Length: 322
Image (cartoon, rainbow, N blue to C red; front, side, top):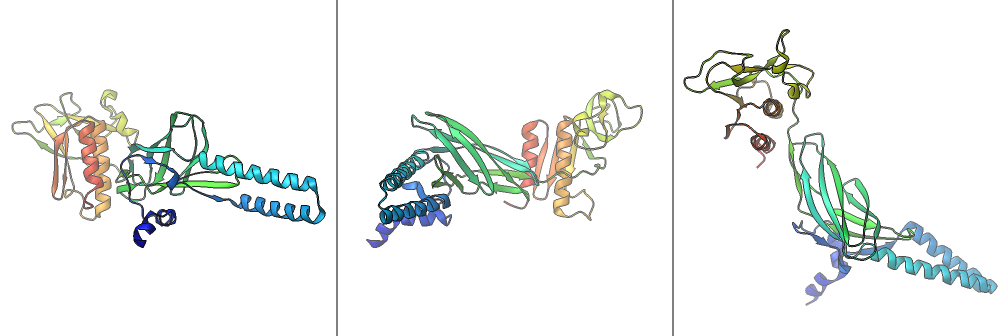
């Protein structure tokens, strides 16, 4: 009986939320009365001490004006507490889209704050990790906020528990609540900057082995040579490096470009290989090649398009992590 009462108490909920033991939820988070906490700020404590000194002085010297000012300011502080609490309660937070990133860049998490009330929610702060986003939410409307989180390594990056808080209108009180949304971004290996060696080409049966700057099927990329046609330069690929690359095409039949984990130099470690393959995927996708990816225990068949690029990048990001 006592345990059930403890689990339902506001103090127990506060301690669980403070320690970050609340589970992540996939649906919206509604900031009800039981989820919003409020305490005086440092300015609020200093204001309370000032009121106490004013009251003591008014009692000692029998100052009618002092009594009036003391109780007027005390009433203002009480009303400010109600407004601070009302500014946050009943806000609904929903998960939006997630922007994936490469290792070392920032991943972006989009959130939607809904205000069901007929008054504006002013000066709200959404704290995620060490990032703070300020926003206002119009009455009976919603506002989108974007949390940027740095990524250090490939794999999944989960959105940490959020703190939504406000000190509006006077800064004497701080009202806050916790929201733990089940959101995560996929962090891809960071592509290296070195020039790729000539890729392995696996021609289909009956196709010719000759290749050059022709105009039939895409064959691969090589460094730019003086005299190459400007129409065959991979401009999108060159934008990501300091080296001009020329598209190579086969003169007969179709060919497939394969990016092979085991074909890379033996001295490269796992992360360096994944970085090299990531760059190969990006260059091949920008050139419109028909390419495949070979990883230990996984093969992505040759294809083209954005969906295939995303599939290959996902495989590289989660290699030996799942």
